[in-house]
Length: 71
Image 1 (cartoon, rainbow, N blue to C red):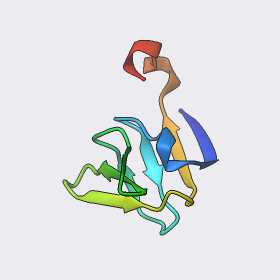
Image 2: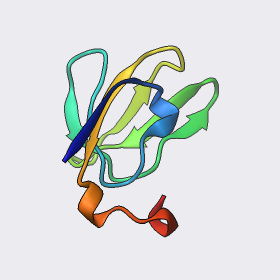
Image 3: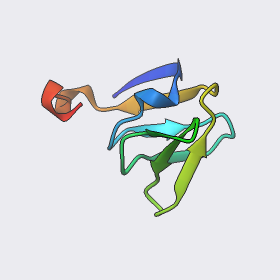
Image 4: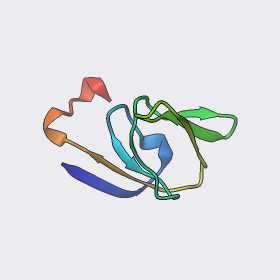
């Protein structure tokens, strides 16, 4: 497992474990999408979360299953 801190929400990909600036931790069920100036991502509990374009997130994922075709 690798963790990257202080990342843009634009870097969120499906399957990433994310902690946002509000302290919410979730698994992304979608890639982040720019919607009306902010990023939207579907969380593992079915909520659509809005992340400010200027906010920073921590992203963790298992590098052993990462491949370029999935990102």
